Image (tube, rainbow over all chains, first blue to last red; front, side, top):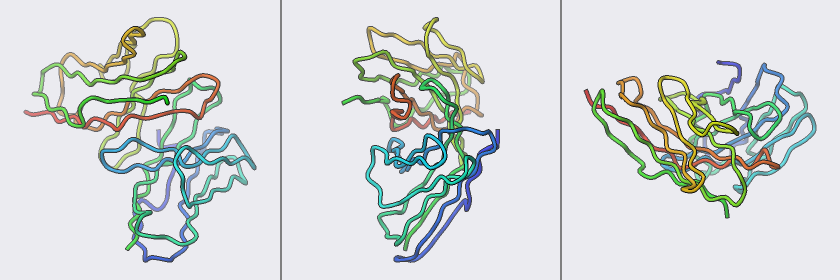
Amino acid sequence: EADIYQTPRYLVIGTGKKITLECSQTMGHDKMYWYQQDPGMELHLIHYSYGVNSTEKGDLSSESTVSRIRTEHFPLTLESARPSHTSQYLCASSEAGPNEKLFFGSGTQLSVL
Amino acid sequence: AQSVTQLGSHVSVSEGALVLLRCNYSSSVPPYLFWYVQYPNQGLQLLLKYTTGATLVKGINGFEAEFKKSETSFHLTKPSAHMSDAAEYFCAVTWGGGGFKTIFGAGTRLFVKA
């Protein structure tokens, strides 16, 4: 089910650069999410959206920002990347309702040097 | 605070052996329970979920899980492991009334030996 797409798959950048991680889904889902995943750790929710023009911060504090101008698009931006931002970022979407499954993208592995 | 605990960051079984991956949660309200699998270089995909009704849930690839409210557990099992089952497995819990309160466990990496 490759209906949620993340680009780039891998990104290596220098400290201080501005980056945007792209996420798009073709399923018409209103809910979208960004999770941060580190090896051996649980996934942490950093941002989510109920729909267009709706964005909220998740449980894990993050210096990133998100926007939701279109239903299918939910990009994540870091204004000034730092080595502490090195991580795997996973985008997901779901239908309405707390018992609906999440559809995940393949992730973006970010390395900040 | 609500939490999800997966016992064992790594589990190793022989091909054909029983797979048992443990998940416990803490919750004061009835939860919705999920198991996701992540293969290398891929995103997570749903194995199975429990919402209401029958407490034994069957999922894809021969996996099943049983919700035990008294034990606050949702362990994942498969009678006979296959090499293709080698992956990372995540237990997740969502509490009703807050669809975004999905909490994931730290994951269990399953190794299958030939």
